[in-house]
Image (cartoon, rainbow, N blue to C red; front, side, top):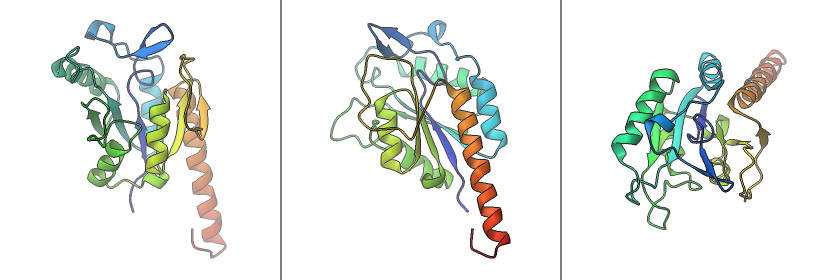
Length: 193
């Protein structure tokens, strides 16, 4: 049976985004790269419940020439050391018709599902921007929007809105327990789960 995953956006979900004029930007240096409070504990709770954790992030600044791939990889090494991620998927492209992985397209999620034997219909996408909600919807995941109050409108309605990853993890775990209880009850009654 395929596993359920929690797909996590990076900037604004796992680490602090740099907000200028109401818009979020990725940190440019390792000194600016700050893992948000509660992220490590929330990720461990999800991992302990059996979820596969996949980082899915757009990083177009490399293609634009304003960031280096080495710096981003160093940030990801820092994340891996503290957050139990199973995989990191990065779209290095600038948004365009030739790219199928730049969120809101679902390419990173679909690729991870194929590589890690994930059931997208039982999985979650957690993000702080409309692009994350769009990617999750396109992949068939339950979408959770982390509302950071950016000056940016949502284009798709998320399935849930949370304040941070800790609250999102609690919601995911409650939904998972409810699903398991319903399956157990159906099995006791002789119905297929």
